Length: 201
Image 1 (cartoon, rainbow, N blue to C red):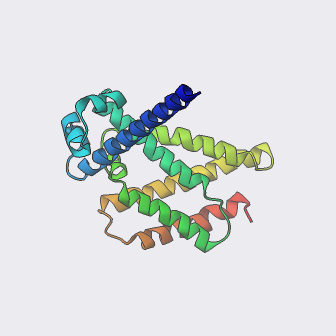
Image 2: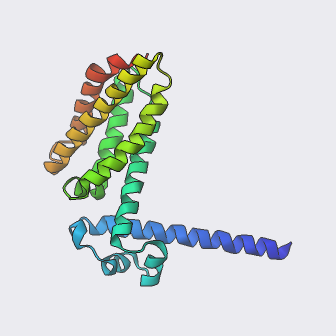
């Protein structure tokens, strides 16, 4: 019994160390992107910034492109979690708070800005759209009637497209406008241009 307990504790410790190293790698990668273009980042850059040895990096990722792919997936998951927490209602404060969270995430995550200006942007958006499609499918299942579901998915796609377009412009202008102002713009478009067609209370 004691051996089993010790074994479980050891495995938990390994899991924790693995998770901590992975977080250190991501944090280092995001910090370096503030200083260098993604295409110029090396494994040496990451391990030096993360304070880890080379073998630890390779225990997690085969190379920098593999780390980039994992960072893309993490970014999409983060955005997806924000989306899942949002339940559209005819409430300006709720909408504004949600889009403010999206704006703050975009501003704090240099990976998003770098992706939008890199050759990988198309692949990133393809991944994002696949995940968003699942979100749309889940939400659409509550809509009444096949025709209603079809049109609903287009409205959601429109909301996603307009939000990405505004964020893209904001990033291109180096976040010159305050996040509050951008959140107001997106909220206004969503509430007047999208929400009335979703049939939400």
